[in-house]
Amino acid sequence: MYIHPAGYRVILVFFLIAVALMVLFHQVSWIPGPLKLVLDGALVVLCMLVLWFFRIPERPFNAAPNEITAVSDGKVVIVEEVDEPEVIGGRAIKICVFLSIFDVHAQWAPIGGKLESFAYHPGKYLVAWHPKSSTLNERTTFAQSTPSGTVVWRQIAGAVARRIRWFVEEGQQIEHAQECGFILFGSRIDIYLPLGSEILVEPGDRVVARGTVMARLPEVH
Image (tube, rainbow, N blue to C red; front, side):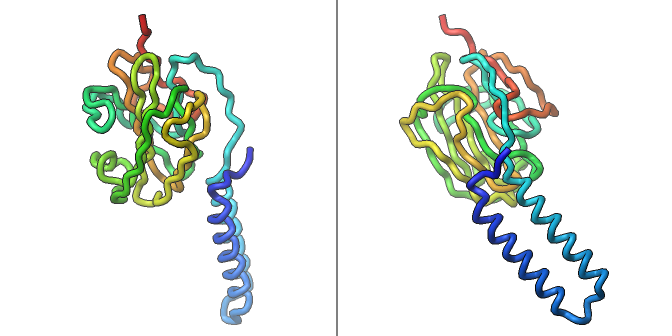
């Protein structure tokens, strides 16, 4: 396990603030000694939680080329057939995964393929489970080409998450399960798959990035 570089600045700022508060608490004479210890302990715990948020555990990867693996850790909240007008221009199967602040927040490509298009959309910060967060919130759109059709997936900021990072460029060949991005704090991932894909998850399921196979793309004859 290691700490993701996206968190270095946040961790440094948070630790400096925590140290400054500890020094301040111990300089104030009217705060009782036992309370100072409690406050110190609370700040240490918060610092450890910030470190834990940016953790990246070792993740096994063993999926077939046509299998869609989870982009991020989280809970499946939606599986439905919808219109995807931005890239696909028609019907697709949508899988929505909600990330709590306790989930690993890095994103890994759900399948191998060329990144045919990429777009960043500034927007609002509705709660991640809001029905319109997919189209109104700050988000990105990744579109990967595969023999079975285009696979589209999005990083979507939530009410707390206001920093989306991505580490790939349009036109790049992306390997299956390659790290592609990071979202700070609670957020969600939407994936759009070609019709005919075999869906292997349902709402309520917990998924693990790189490890959980969520679907299989249709065979190409």
